[in-house]
Amino acid sequence: MKRRFFLLLLLLVALLAACGPSAGGGLSFPPEREALDRALTELGGGWQTAEGPEIPSGREAPPGYESPVQTGVFPIVNDDGRQGFVNATAYGDDPLPDGSPAKALNLSFTPAALLTPDPEQAARVQTEDEPRFWRLAGRLLDEGEAVDRLAEEIGGALAAADLSAVESLVCYGRREDLLCRSAYGREPDSGLLLLERLDLWQAAAPLTYWQGDFAALFPSYGWPKDLTDPEALAAGSPQEKCLCLGRLTALAPGETGLFYSEALGCHLLGRAWEGTLTDDSGAELAVTVLPTPRSSDELMEDLLHLVRFMDGRYVVELSAPADLRFRL
Image 1: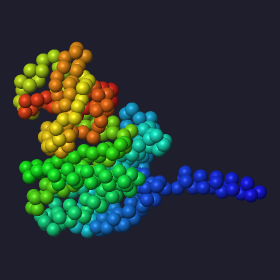
Image 2: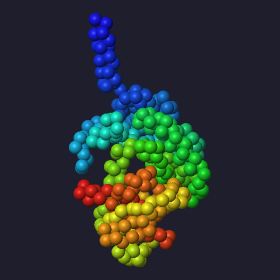
Image 3: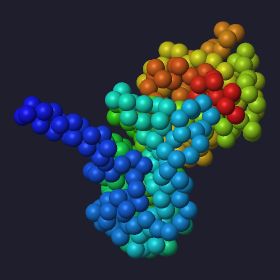
Image 4: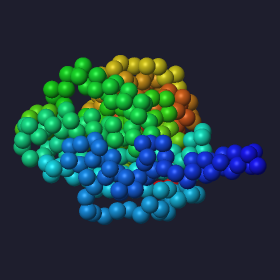
């Protein structure tokens, strides 16, 4: 009888673990509105979800995915009138090693240039709101320690860099399988660079982000172009760019600093890569790969590359798998 009782107890515990909320501080992913409100209240700053359009939790899968993705999109607002969105997506077709769906999280806010001219408000955004939302991201993803380290690393890089001439900036980071992109804009009255967007995604999910970047570029630029005449690629204006089919090889760490991305329309802060881009004909082109959270192995798996000639060198701005051409 005692053995049967303990077996039933173990079964009940297993069922509760499987059906209950995630380990992310009691939050499922995507979160429910009520749970997100509680988390925002605990963080302080007067932030709450706001009335507005919501995307249903289940929607049609994007091209190449068999299972529906689960998405929650919530407008948020604070007492100062600053607005934003929390966008959480779980990809059922991209399981992590433990079998759970890969997660992607986007937090976006009122652009710094549109804030009411108020230096005190801008200072609060930088010193109080930004740490709050890094903590919220860690809690939603159940990756608190990794997100804390990313926030420290990016904060240290920002503090050490001379950003006086920068109006908009993107920083990348990575902690094992968690990738990060934080975007900043300058508030004109205070002159502070303020967080406008924070993206975090787990390694099984980044393909969706990069494919989105390329999908927006394809209508504007011809694809593909080969590397047999690199002089022709450099003959146009410094801003000219093209999409090339090839492999990156012999990648090695390059310089760390500020780089301007024409494709993104902002500066990037981080470490670049130096290497060679080779196409099917065997033509080779020495290139600088702009800062990215992706590893050298991941970059060398890609076949599509957005190449630009500027400041006397060929720059790879973005890379993606070749099968993107079948998804447009």
